[in-house]
Amino acid sequence: MFIQNRMALVESVETLLAQEQRMNQIANNLANVDTSGYKKENVTFWEMLFTAHDDRQRVGKAMRVISDHSQGPMEMTGNPLDIAIEGEGFFRIQTPEGIRYTRSGSFNLNSEGQMVTPDGNLLIGEGGPVVVNGKEISVNQGGGITVDGELVNQLAIVTFDNYENIEKEGNSLFKLTDETVAERISEDFRLQQGFLEGANVNSTLELTEMIDLHRAYQAQQKIIQTVDELDSQAINRVGKLTG
Image (cartoon, rainbow, N blue to C red; front, side, top):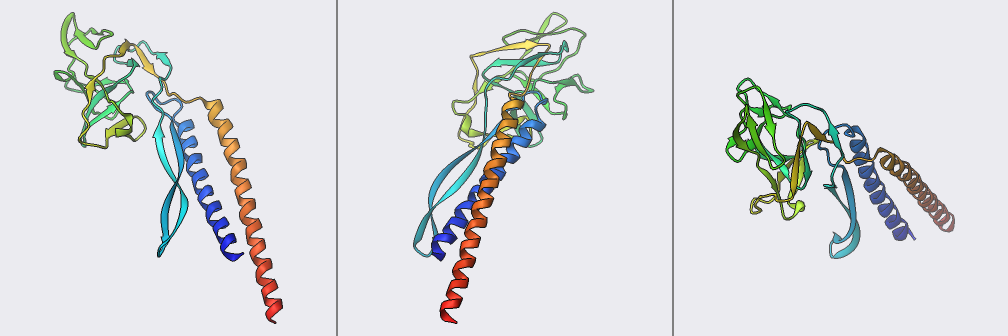
C-alpha cells in the first residue's frame, strides 16, 4: 500500500506543478493583452518514460511552453511609423544579441533617423537598417518604404517553414533555436501602415480557463490530503499489530 500511495503522491505533485505552470502562462497572457504583436502562450502536456532509479522505469509528465501564432486584431493608430503585418511573417530586428523577429510594428525614429523598436533595436530592411531622412513616409502593402516620394528601402518580412524552430524572447521578440534553419521571405502578407496588430489573447477565455484550473488544483490538493490520511492510518495500524 505504501508504494501505491507514494506513487499517487508523485502523480498528484506532478499534476499540481503542471497546473501551476499553466496558471503562470494565463497570468502572463492577461498581463500582455494590450501589448502589440503579443502571441499568447500555451502549455502542452505529454507523458514520457524515464528511469526513476536503478533500472526501474516509470511514466512521468512533461511540460513545454508553445506560442500561438494566430493572427491578432488590426488596431488603427494613425501613426505613420506603426506598421501591422496581415498574414504570415515577422519583421527582422537587429539587437545586441543578434537578429530577432517580431510581429510588433510599433516603431520610432532615433537621432540618426533610423526606425527602431521602443527598446532602440533597429528595423532591418532588404537594404539594411531603415533610414528616414524626410518628412513624409509611406509604406505600401508589399513593404516598399517611400520617403518624400522616393523609394528608400524594402522591408524584409520573413517567415519559417516550422515555427517550432523559434522561441519567444521577452514579450514580443522571437529567436531561432536551430542555427541550421534558414529564414525565407514571406509571400503571404500585406502590410497596413497606421495600424498595429493587437495581442491574440481572448480575455474571457483566459479567465474561464483560470477558474477551471483553480478548481482542478483544489481537486489535486484533496487527493494529496486523502493519500496522506491513508498513510497515517496504515502506520497507526501497523503500530497496533506490532505493539
